[in-house]
Image (tube, rainbow, N blue to C red; front, side, top):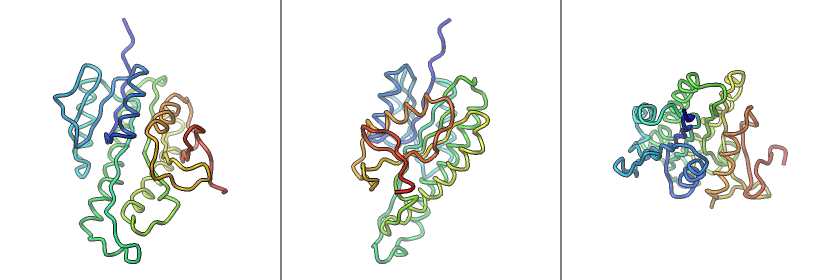
Length: 230
C-alpha cells in the first residue's frame, strides 16, 4: 500500500507568500489545504482543498482543522499566514478605535493561538517521523516600533512570545514552532517580501528534524541569519 501523502494547512492565502508555500509543498508531494476568506470550496481538487474562513472568528479556525482532517487527514505542517493592521497617525497611536484594535488582535493573536492549539492536538496523533511543524509568518514588529502599526505590533509581539514559549515547551515531543521574519541583508525590515523565499525557508524548516532557532530571521537567497546582536 502506498504511503499516505502528508498534509499542509495554510491559513491565509495571499497571492505572494500563501501561493508560493502552497506550490512548493504541492510540488513535493503534499496535499494542500488553504483556509482564507477569498477561496472557493468549489475549486477544490483531489490534492488541493479550499476552506472559506474568516479569521476574526476563532470558530472558523477550528472548523478549518476539522475539515482538512476529514478530507485529507491531520496536517503535519501548519502555516499561519494571516495578518491584520489598521493604520493610525504615527504621532497619535491611540487614535485607533478599540473595535479596530480588537479586530486586529483577534486575527493576529487569538486565531493564531487557536490554530497552534489545534495543530498540537493533531501532532499528538501523528507518527514521530511526521514534520509536526507550526510556522507563523511574522515581521520586524516583535523587536521594532512603528507607531502607525500599533495593532499589528502588539499582535506580532504577542504571537512571537507564543511561538518562543511553544518552541521550548514542545521541543522534547518533537514539535517545532517558528516565527518567520524576512529582512534585507543589513537586517532592516523588508516590506516587499519574497513569497518564494518564504516557501524555501518553510520547506527547509518542515524537513529539519529538530527545533531550530524559533525566531527565523532570514534573507532572500541566503536563508536564516541571526540579527540579534547587530
